[in-house]
Image 1 (cartoon, one colour):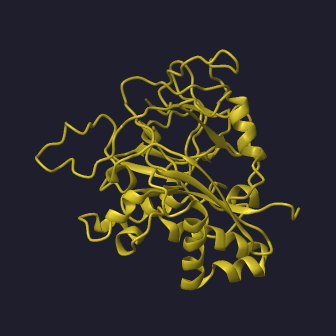
Image 2: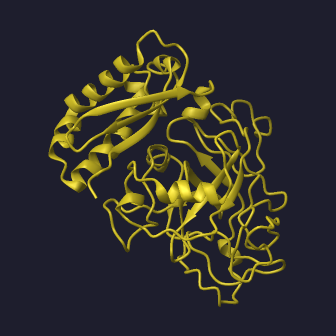
Amino acid sequence: MDDFQLFSSLRYDPALLQIPGSSLSHAGWNWANSSPLYMLDYHRDRMLSAATHWGWTAAVEALEGDAGLERLGNYIVSSIGDSTRAPLRVRVAITKQGALSVVSSPVPETTPANLFPARLPPPGETQSSGPEEGFNEGIPSKTPEYEILVDASRTARSEYTHFKTTLRAAYDGARQRAQIGLPDLKEVLIVSEDGAVMEGSITTPYFWREGRWVTPAVSSAYSREKGSGGQNGTSRRWALGRFVKSAEAELPDQCSSNKTQGHRRRGDHPGRLTGRGRRVLAEQRCEGVLLWEDQAQLISSERTAGCSLVVPSCCGCPARAGNRRRCRGVGAIRVA
């Protein structure tokens, strides 16, 4: 199956040129380098990792080292045109032969706090509810709010879920089953065959649990056993180095009207989704979800006041596929 390309989607934004020398020293590469490209180093790294995995020698040579990073950045900017002042979503792809291509489209403007948050606020906290002056500096906005659904089908982990390629059938299929169109403020969580949340169809999800944000585990190299089977997104990598923990398992949809049945995947203490268990794992309860797009910004808020996760189907849950009932279970993932 060689008829595919590797790609990454990132943000082009001239406002990023103001980051170097600013107070946002935690911004990483964009603070140390004057560039309109958001986290370019991490985007290059994910493409290089995939090219190395498949043994694409020409692509590796085009991307590796400081020269490869500079070459990639120059190619993207020259393809867009340095006169472009509006922010763009940029999809940069590379072939097995090392040929690059770029496709871009408009994205909304946003604030530095949404691109490089100083911290991720816990559920229920707003920008105006901080305990002291200056506490909310660098805190991302909690809008827009997305409706989060769980895919009704299971997805087999593979090289094409671990790495980002143009073979997107698993993700496109999940969005079609959830009836999500391009303008919809909705996201669907991809779930593995053993019941683990792998990732969102276009985002990295973060779950609030036991006083901290956790995100699905991803193995450093492709593995059929380790990690969730999803991708190591660029914003995920950035957040892990600052204020997010990697989780081993997270419950996607195991709930009922009054109790949690079975086990969850993706928490600090792994548990498999069996559909037969009866032990309530309240200590693994997830109380909030945030979504983050690699090419744009933190895009979704959360709240703990009531469960509003739409569960298309699950074992022992009254929320069946098609009726789109709101899940009210004790163990439900609580989202805005």
